[in-house]
Length: 320
Image (cartoon, rainbow, N blue to C red):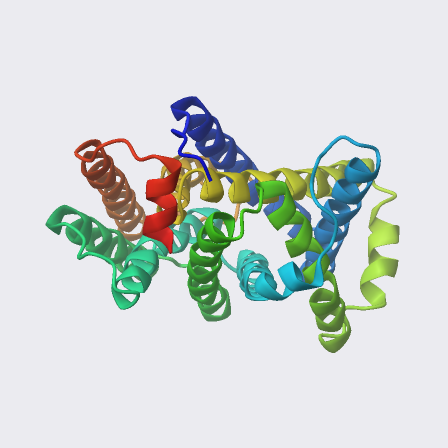
């Protein structure tokens, strides 16, 4: 591949788009799950919508994404598995965890990415990065101690989600660089590979077929139908922007964007959709968690600024 410099504009647009979509998706999913608790069925519908949209867009010539390949599907199987595990556990956690605490726990992803990088043989992070992620983790602990609505199941689901999010971010970065796949193509394979796994889950968990009858009944409500439709549309937008951000930038950049959007989500989470019992210890922990997240972002920015601009070939060599 010829050497080409990555456009700063494209990198910025990809990062901002993912941040906005990710923040909106948390609230939209929470709004749907407050009325419709069948999270696996919701995820299945979101993935089905993504599959159909990309398929027809390719048939009609709106995208140049390549057709389905068994060999490529095999290489992306783990990406799809970890992605669906992440989203499934995240949706399950939203049933019992309020949005500010959910965001706080998800801010532990950069720590998990750094740990994964350490075991993968990457360079030791700077002192500022280490201290910032430890501050973020300490904030989660303090906030949890002051969370009167503490839900062990919800917390467990959120922590497991962090693990799977870390795994799929690292794998998406590697797949995008080494296999030469575009973000739309990764999204297409992910959606297709998700469906058999999700269909098995909704049957195994007993959601199907009652979940469909409940869905049809609730869809008679205009407000619920509009919220559900937004959830399906934003599921597509979030998938695309997430893969785009990870491929154009890196897995670490995607997690940094997640930390920044979490500041807005945490603030809005106290006033939107309810379910938050304000306590001094809880608020203090969330503030510590947010400060740690912002500190981490600043540390990574300084680290990147001190390096020379990378070309596409440099990035590919680093990822392999």
